[in-house]
Length: 108
Length: 112
Image (cartoon, rainbow over all chains, first blue to last red; front, side, top):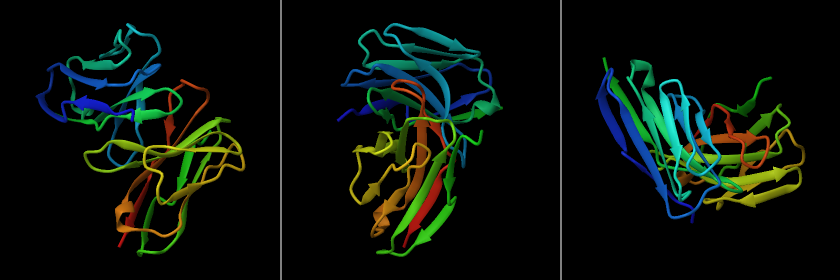
């Protein structure tokens, strides 16, 4: 099936540090997306990538769509306490599949 | 716009009971889907629909039924609940093929 391997599973960082997480798959996807989930809520879109090789930024967030269409990464620069949450990668063709998530903890 | 609305927010069932999780969207999205979220497993696709009258299975469809009689509504039915179906269920919709999904706030289901 279209499984996505997301790493790391969890991260504990100090406020101000940079964060990097990635997602790989054995399948090709036409779109890669990154979502963030806060407790008790549904995931919210952070960045969507539509073209292989595309590098996109949204404030302190930067994500890239891998050239092979089988991977993507998300970087967060200068982390702040409100960055705490679970980050999911997703790959989309006819439907959308998700990675298992990266749980981010930021210590002030 | 309310976006994607899920009801109920919480539900407790006994094994063997049936129930329907409701999902409605007011964004005129053609595509709707149901996911379940379990600790350490991310979101797994149960069923999806690309338009009224059309549904298809996702990764984990067993034990669940869906129908899509209108563009706005996409209910998820559990015919005979099992403890393995204890989970948080999310409904999501999107406008077109590769556009991002918009999620509801989830239904937390416990089956005892």
